[in-house]
Image 1 (cartoon, rainbow, N blue to C red):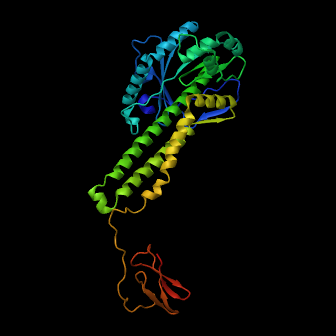
Image 2: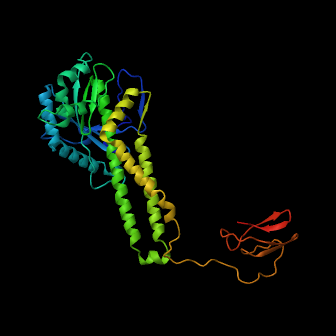
Length: 375
């Protein structure tokens, strides 16, 4: 992908909160590109800046940014524009064009897109802004309406429900995430760091939605196949064998993708970043999707040994047996299973082992004399 985009070895890095000395890193940093790098244009949408990020677990994040210097009335107008679906349609089109451009680097691309949209309103100050408490006191109603995209005033109960899920590290910073958007009040560096964590949480939500959808569709297809017996599968006894292979492949594939998704970002020592990511994930309902995927995997796991059993509807092969007495045995003879072996110490019955081959090609010596190889 870097070769197709003409990018150097650099990658996106997480901007931390400036007042915290954390150890935050991506396990495999996403690739970041702008409109000029991708050869994309935003004709008909003046004032929009484009940035696209590619995560290694299969998520493309399209960020459209508009800068303004107005008041809350202008923010409400921008929120209504975002809720109208115009920007979402533009982002979907840009994502499709990126996929076409980078098709040689994609593994198992999907024809249909699974999308999530999230709107963030950010107020930036120079470090000497008003406190978060005074901002909530004066504009708490406007912030709640902004996150709910409502023109009318909200009830006191709804206002309190929106504003109670908030996080501040310093006196003059504030993040209020919701299920469909967030409000951020911080310095420029703090806003970028919060946006990056919110973007990462949304990428995880999208990925677990995909896992849930894929498990449901694949399991429905495999169970439907088990109900329809094909003549050659019934003849060869492979009806359950084929299903077991598909279930195993699905189980391993989804577990590998889940591990890669959950370990994509390491938060060690940064309490603020961990709390913000946890709060955003809770507001997005990420744990609900994780539990749904894990429940399907837990349901699938006990069925794998059952599918590995021989097909009861298929034919069975008769076991190979030795009929009649074996010719005169001599010391060190290599005999079929279940025959007697003569040794200097006497005649020993060789135990029948279903894992042994009909004839062994090797012999080994024991203290009592030559003995047939048990393999």
